[in-house]
Image 1 (spheres, rainbow, N blue to C red):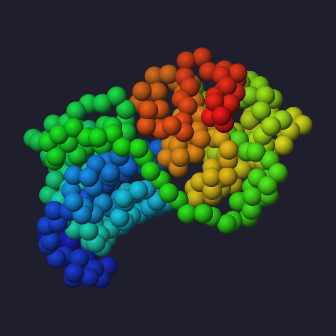
Image 2 (image 1 turned 90 degrees about the vertical axis):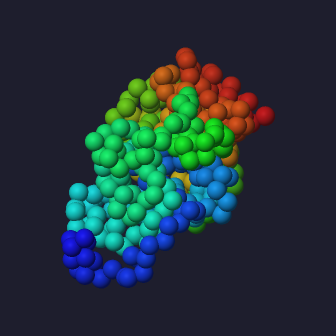
Image 3 (image 1 turned 60 degrees about the vertical axis):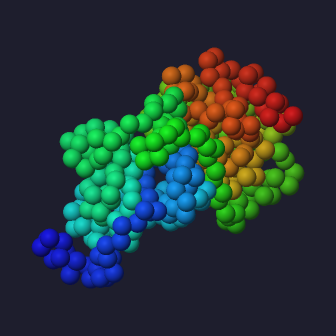
Length: 340
């Protein structure tokens, strides 16, 4: 097409990127903008690898999610997209022309974003599967051959994207995330704490305005009173909704360290590795914790979200999931159960 050739000259695209090579072993996953959604796609990755011998799986993610995709089990490569330029046509065209994984056997667009579907089509995907029907997905995706089962959890539903290709039910797979060790100043501080104290890391709130998912401040205060004699408390998270939790700690004579808005994602993973137990509400960092096999207490204050997003305790022996009348006493009991 004339407009592609014109833009390719502008961006000096290499000729070998145009080479048509229908690859029966190449799969592209266009992930979401969230940590949790991106992590639980690891079940899909593992099902691809199990059913397609020697398959290559490539993630396309926003730049800030690069480590979340990179260190997942069985992911082969990660390509980042600049979300700040998501509406910049010139950038999108350049991204397509310079995308090195042309003509994949299948692309999965998890959230049916128009941009992702367009890219999947223009890189020559032979099959495209997505989650929603809209004007773009009707035109680009394989709706005539999209029979898949419906499952309770989002992890299983994401894995089921592959069912139309394999013609059978998927197997539920544990998410596996293996990040590298980090040696930053923040982690050195935690190492010093760890030498003399046991650590509980708490993620009491999410980064978005979903206060119904957050730990009630009175419960948080009572929990800290219960555990502060035995553990040093670390606060971890990102956003503008943590002030009341920090304030609750500063008014108490206890050992704690505040890392709110101070850690990047890989530093968070190192904090989790150093922690004896992580207590987290339903948020992306909760998924990160149990995927690393850290001892995790997952708090679902919105009961309706438990079936969709909670880790399956039959698979993850390092996890206790709480919902329905969560109390500080119940959390303390769970700490003792995980510590036994």
